Image: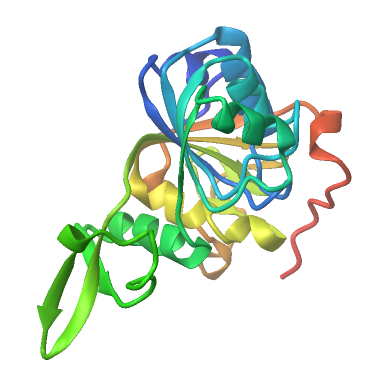
Length: 231
């Protein structure tokens, strides 16, 4: 079944109060067109999960600056002084996780598990006593899986069935988020007919994808991205 949607209809499915994972690693893989449409439509009280906060006035920073985001779950916001100021002013709740930990929390959810044990950060402020347990003579922290209502994903290439190929560092979080969210919305500039991709080249199978939006062009938000996928 074709999963093609218009940009407007795909984003209109997201209600206020939703938890939304956003793919990307800095600029690469960030779904700017989906984000910009979410800004335009104005859904509020969102919880965003993303590796970073992009740069000021750019990407998810636009959502945050527009007052649409109550909470951000991330690994760092050091490149975004605007979001840092909003956090310090108490206008947004920011929850930090080490980068590998965030990826594993998302991967665990996508694998159908509820959490995992780790010894990372046991002696730091990120660990509370209630989160630890003893197992086989060792002390571990319990890390819970991290899910979302929606995931917004940018694919370098896709087909109408939702089979996706990523490029470069976009592959760091996007495949994990596509597995961990209840509903997955994908944008791509390069849409192919089903059967174009060899199965071994597909990074995210269409079974995880709900909506595919074909972009007519990439805006200046994306910077210079080469979408030729090497095989």
